[in-house]
Amino acid sequence: MVIKLVKIFFLLACIVMGVMWAYYLTGEFSDTVNTNIRILGIPQRLWVPIGGVTGAIIGLGILLAVQFVSQEIYERIAPALVAIVLAMVAGYFIGQYIFFWAPQAELTLRIFVMVSLVLVFGFIGIVLGLTRASNWESLISAVQKKGTNYSNVKIIDTSILIDGRIADICKSGFLEGTLIVPRFVLRELQNIADSTDILRRAKGRRGLDVLKSLQDTQMDCQIEIIEENPKDVREVDAKLVTLAKKYHAPILTTDFNLNKVAQIEGVRVLNVNDLANALKPILLPDEQMEIKVIKEGKETGQGIGYLDDGTMVVIDGGKPYLGHTINVIVTSILQTSAGRMIFTRFQSLVS
Image (cartoon, rainbow, N blue to C red):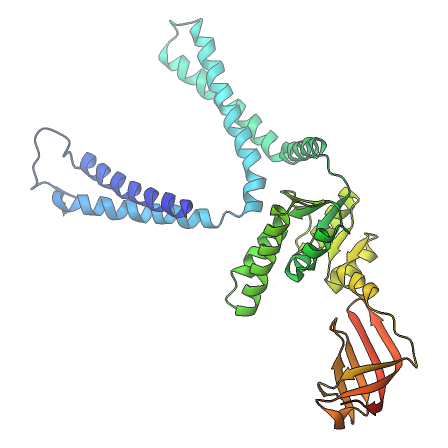
């Protein structure tokens, strides 16, 4: 909201400035005003609205140009600009200091010396800004890292926040330490929350709510939002892996692909789905259980049911008993990081 107000104020200021320039160029600030004067074939009275329109066009052009300056471009250009400006200012003040001791110097000599110093120092600033800015950025990052003291660090990705179970795990006391949320993960979550798709928008807002609850609740887990954003990689998953290597920390996720990529890169992964699978009751082949048949399966005669924890149960011969609770015998179990499936066969009808 503040940014919008600043943009509106800037645009109005440009319009006013355009009108002021029109008054100045047409001489209306002078004591005698002749509205019959024509400049470039345009009556003097029309220059005021022309100045306002010109100011509005220039203001809109600047606002449009600023939109193309991304965070990455700004972070790369800002150190160079700072170096250039500081070097040119240093050259100017050195010239002023020289002529403080030579007040009788000619104006031409003053101009030549000042221009020469600004030129030399400006060149030095450009060279240092373009060639040493990355080193300065690395130095600043090293200082910032030295000033942080995280304990038992874990890095959070977007999927774990959208999943939401991380909040319950932290409240139960099974997870402790510092949970790092990179700024680019928070930005990705905000983009999902602003999506036009209703389901994606709901997921994004749930993720933001989970993060807010983790920050507000007093528990062993501490949320730390960091600004670090690896510049040499573009994908969010690759950035997370890079940060995990830097902090020697595991990644908390439910993303199957991120899980595999991190393992290939030698990064430890804490997958909540693996934790959920480990907490499910153990079932062995030939063990009996009761299950309600919910729907038909893909194969002929199959029925599908679900345990209380959401585990899918495939029932061979269960199709005729849709809506009924039946006794089944476990034949095999398929368990992966994505979930678990139990294969059974029909034994008897319960109800």
